[in-house]
Length: 178
Image (cartoon, rainbow, N blue to C red; front, top):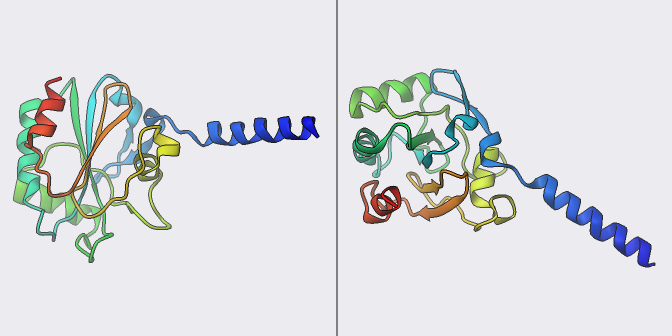
């Protein structure tokens, strides 16, 4: 009986460890259908935000772009993930989203291909961001468009910010200046 219990404990531990995913292991596609390897983010703080073009919070693109212009580069990256999970507020194709972001907000920070940020088809990155079992920090749910996840230069989830928290909020700026 002891042997069976030990085997079960070891098996459960193995499953938990194998379910862990390192932040830097993710690979996604950009809006231009190019590969984006998260390994390139090592040593940088990362703000991940799910976006939508037809949302009341869409003007946050302007503040995200200003934040990118002020802080983006070697130490900080903003990554936008268009998602159509809330009231069909991001119905466009990747090409349409890219044109919208460029023409209306001059977006130059990295924008990725449209994904799902909740539900059965949730992208693996968002599974990591929202699951304490995977990220080792906290569980969360994406409540709306423009929810922000702050990831340290070591690939650790540090903070989840509600959608209405602006990109230039002191919580973001203090985190950037730590």
